[in-house]
Length: 101
Image 1: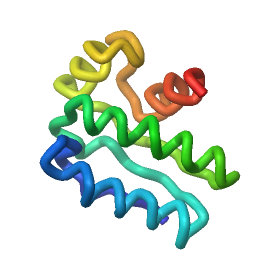
Image 2: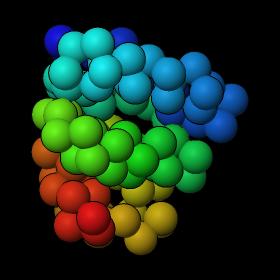
Image 3: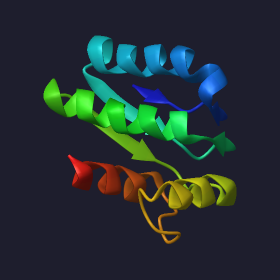
């Protein structure tokens, strides 16, 4: 399954998005999350992505991030220290997260 309709990953939507992503892992045994439409993210959203990868790895499920990150998302992720400003794709972000685990 592929999730590609999330435009905001912020504290206001954290619980809702977390449940959607966990369902992707549990019901569909994993899948792809296209971050290309993501227009805004905050620290809570970044934490959700990290937790999601950690959860998927612990359950031996496949989860992938895809899509070109928008400039604002790249900037926020770089500010968090998760990866540098050259991290411009979902695949690069996923790789940076997996390097933490």
